[in-house]
Length: 467
Image (cartoon, rainbow, N blue to C red):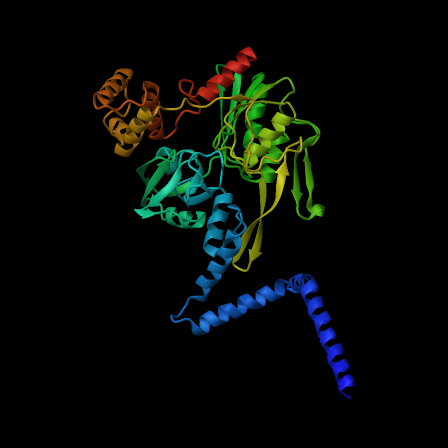
């Protein structure tokens, strides 16, 4: 009997040991299978339970709508994508105003800064200016692409989302808002922007030196293609065989719009391709037969670090298909596509794909490099300090207040007075600042600047010499 009992105990112990080994050896697999079985509905139930617990038991009464917005913001923050976000009803209405070509505010396109290992300032915790909209309060105040929103009404903007900044900058027309700008990652200055109803311009054209058509595309909206077509047809009627397309500080716009514009330059062939997670959604956008711009027309495209999205699609198509020479700075590098998904009275703006140039290149986060690089000369440390002080003290604005239409002698005297005060960012910089400030105060500023615009001057030289 004892032996029998010992045998039973031995068998049970052995079985338990085997079972333990099986659990130890195969627990990762079992755990992985459990994780896989944990589906989206499980997370939704947990989120719902957490929300109920907070509503019922948190020490203070909570606003459910604010909790929901916070949860949505958290979802999109973890994507680490500045272009994907949750839009409540108010922000959605503002975005609709913008895409329809009119809204109330100061005229800035902004984006959350992203990490760039080559940026000497690293990733700054501020919202970045993609570009100001021409002929708006921000443009007239001298805000540039690459600036940062450092503070609004004295409140630090560190950690603000683009929605936070947008909420504070928008408002009733004729009301002021004080904005502190961070430039070059090193100095700040204040500007007072008086809000107004913003009407987004699309295209400006002119003829340079009687032989070169110039067309500036400010943004790609439903109204862009007809304006571009009108300008191109006018240039062709005048027999012009040189064309400059300027998309500097163009933040982009609608994909359909830029495809329609690019179609004016090509007869058949790929303009841009789009690729999505779901392959069945992939598309290749091709030009239709026939074109507006003759093949004999020589084309130059001007870009800078504020050229983004749709403006990069046009530039990439013209460059890859050897239809235009690209001059300027490396572009912004926004090669992603966003779609709007309605949610009752709100929406989700989500990155769903990327676009590729005709050569199959994605420029997302890298941009398009120019064929001929042209940028403004860099200032020395002493010149940069003088430049910063000129901005902070608004010396140029005060000068224009006293001399609304300054003569060259007036400017010469101003330069001498600044140097006497120990301020000298360079004669060219001062003259350019005076010219820009004077132009911003005009109701109709000139379309081109043949005195200080080094990129445009280089483009004209290329068209003349071929080099």
